[in-house]
Image 1 (cartoon, one colour):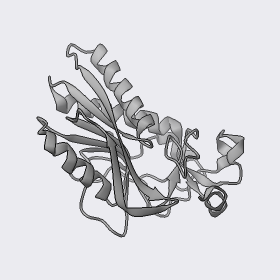
Image 2 (spheres, helix red, strand yellow):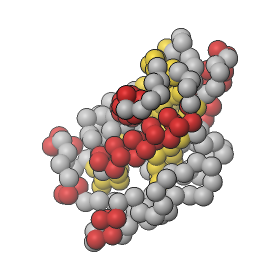
Image 3 (cartoon, rainbow, N blue to C red):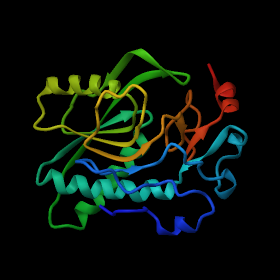
Image 4 (tube, rainbow, N blue to C red):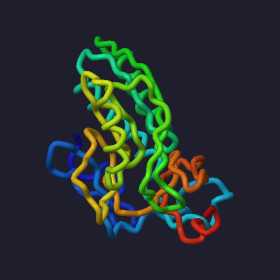
Length: 234
């Protein structure tokens, strides 16, 4: 795992550098500080119909792709010769899961060890507008096993509910990969086995993360502003 800044060229950017060295502990990640001001939207291309709805870019798409590729490498090293059933958590997790699976396939094709993968899907619904709901719906996932792919872990409550259901199928092992983990005021100590970035407690959209089904077509992970929340509130 690379130590220090993920991209050295960022040190020449006039904005404050967002990344610290990866946290010490069993799960390396890229933490983004609470005072990181983000990237100006003017530095990137994004859908015109979202003009005025976003605060700033938190994580550019290229950094997401590179970090996901590294997660795939870590998973390949840990899985060994075991086949994988990938359980994709819809809807926000589909982009991350698809890219992660593709990276694992590419690594498998270019190595002496072939890993067979099967993909299944489950849907969790735990948000209304930008508020987390108490009750969650779990839809799908009849063939549950080893690796789950999720977009973001906030309090960890939704993932714990899902894992309790998966364990009923008595899989050989369960590993959780998440692109994002939030630092929240309600931490329960849960951390995925693999995650890309640790971010402030912000409501983020893009890269298939939505706000009432909007912003899934945004490639970068961005922070939605109050105007965007009001515009797409249901």
